[in-house]
Amino acid sequence: DNNFSMENMEPKRPQFLTVLCVLTFVMCGLSLIGGLWSLVMNTPERMAENIEQMRAVSPEMADQMEEQMILMQESVYTQIAPYLNFVYILLSFLGAFMMWKLKKKGFYVYLAGELLPYIGLIIGGKQAMAMMGAAGGGVAKTAGLVMMALMFVFDIAFIVMYALNLKHMNDE
Image (cartoon, rainbow, N blue to C red):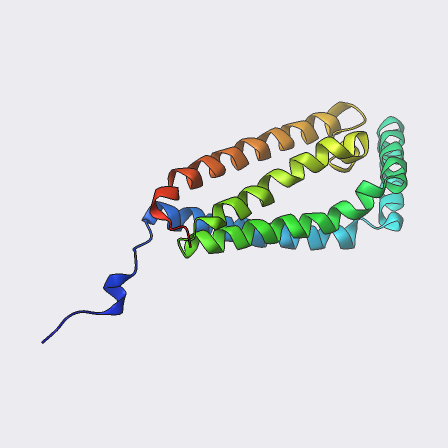
């Protein structure tokens, strides 16, 4: 009676790596939903409606929103950025899936998906910041900058945690 099975020959994925991958899968799913929602909700017509609603509450804030909308409409970057975000989500998901399968290459694919958006923000400059809600002034600017800082901290933390698991992955 031989208890040898193929299951015993495959390397076992560490529980920590499993948790990281599952969290990444969930975040990719939520990001995909958020990106689709943003495409539907951020039409020029809806943005104009929001500005007019804001004008009744705060004319200054409405003017800032209008300036951001103009910046976004004039920028090639902000026109393609929502679609680039889907590419970044796909890269992050694909990288996490490869790491789930214990493929070391997945880390580098994931790394690209996590770092490319920041490169886009740097290249996109003021228009990219406007798209993130970090241009203009006041509460919107502060909220946008806080959100970007939090995203950056979480992205770096996940990159480091995945890097700590590279020793469990193979080079195939």
